[in-house]
Amino acid sequence: MRSSLPKVLHPLCGRPLIAWPIQAARDAGAGKVVVVDGPKRRLADHLPEDVEVAVQAEPKGTGDAVAAAAGAIADDATVVVLVGDVPLVDAETLTGLVKAHEESGAAATMLTAELEDPTGYGRVVRDAEGQVERVVETKAGGDATEAELAIREVNTGILAFDGAALKEALGKLEAANSQGELFLPDVLPRLKEAGREIGAHVAADAAVTLGINDRADLARVRAIAQERINLAHMRAGVTIVDPGSAHIDVGVTIGADTVIEPGCVIRGATTIGEGATIGPFTTLIDAEVGDEANVLRAHLHRARVHARTNIGPFAYLRPDAVLHEGAKAGTFVEIKNSTIGKGTKVPHLSYIGDADVGEGTNIGAGNITANYDGRKKHRTTIGDRVRTSVDTSFVAPVTVGDDAYTGAGSVINEDVPEGALGIARQRQSNIEVYAERVSRRER
Image 1 (cartoon, helix red, strand yellow):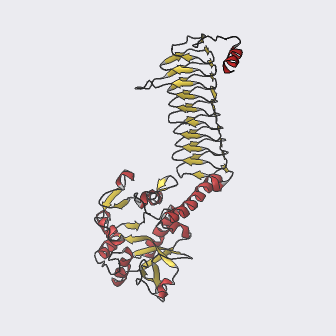
Image 2 (cartoon, helix red, strand yellow; image 1 turned 30 degrees about the vertical axis):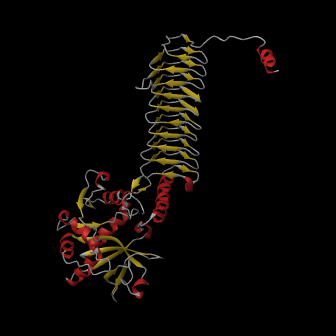
Image 3 (cartoon, one colour; image 1 turned 90 degrees about the vertical axis):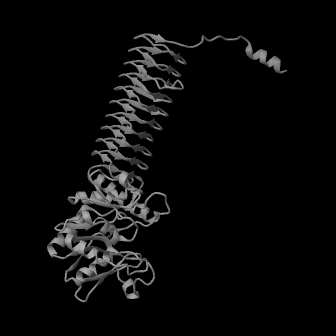
C-alpha cells in the first residue's frame, strides 16, 4: 500500500478493511471472532470490544498467524479462517462454505474461485478424480510450474476446518518455499497424508474473493462495494438519480421515497428520513436528516435537521447544529452548536454559533453571533417571533426577548426586552456639498 497506515485499516465505504470480514462472520452466525494482530497491536483500538485478539510475534506467514490463535480454537468447532484484506466476502458465501464443509465430513474445505486473471493467487491443484490435492503458491519465481500457473481456480485464502484437525496439522508445517514462511494452505497435504478428505466450495460470485494489495485494488473493490450499497438502497425504495456519482457509506440509513441527486457524498452513521431530497453536490457526515427535508448543495457534519427543513444552497451546518421542523438555513449560512426553533428562518449570509433561537423567528441577512471573547465561548438567546434586521451582530452573552426587533446595522451587546426594538448604532449625519469640496481639493 506504500502507506504508514496498516493495510487492513484503510477505509472502504465507511469501514476499515478489517471490519468487513468481521461483520460478514457475525452476520453468518459466528460464535467467536478472533483477529490476529502483530506485536505492536496496531489493530486493537479499531476492533469491536467483543473481538478477541491473538498476537503473531513475527510475520512468518499465514500458517504461523493461524497458529498464533490456536489457543482460541475448540477441538469440536468448525473454524473458518478469513483474510483481513478480502472485504467483499459476505454472510451468504460463508454460510454456504460452512454447510458444504459440515455436510461433506471433510477435515478442511477451501473456498475457491475461478478467475480470468489468477495472477498472484495460489492455484488449486486437483487429482484425476477432481479432489483437492494441494495449493501451490505463486508469489515468487520457482514456487509453481508452468502447468500449475495455467490453472484458473485459485485459493481465496478462506477455509473451513475441523478445529482438532487444524491444530494438529499446524504443528507439522514447514517453511518449504522461497519466502521461508509457513503457508496455511500447506496444512492441506498434511491432512491428506493423515487420511482426511479435503473439500472445495466454489464461490458463486468471484468478486467476494477479491483481495487488496495496493491502492489500485482498493479502488476496484470500492467500486464494487459502492455499487452493492447503492443497489440495496434503490431496491429499498430510494431514488439515486446517478448511482455512479453517489458515494454512500455502508452504515448510512435512507428512508423510502428519498431522492439522492448527483454528486452527493453521504458518510458515517448518517440517517435520512422518508421523502427527503438530498443534493445535488451535498455532503452529509454523521448527520441526521428528517422526513421531507430538502438539502441542496450543503455540507452537514454531525448536524440534525428535522422534518420539512430547507437547507442551502451553500450552507454549512457544523457539529451540534439542530434545526427543528420547518426551519431554514439558506445561502451561505453557517450554524454550529446552536438550536434553531420550529419554523425559524436564517435565510442568507449569517453565522449562528453557540445560540438558541426560538420558533417563528426571522434572522436578517448578514447576522452574526459574536460568541468568543478571546478566552471563552458564550451563548446568545433569541426568543420566539423575533425579527432581526440586516447586519445585526449579537455580542454574547446576550438575550433578545420574544416578539422583539433589531435595527439594521446594530451591534446588540445588551439584552433586548420582549416586544422591544433594539438599535445600537451611531446616528447618521450628512455633510452637505461634500462632493464639491472633494472636487476643489483635487484641482
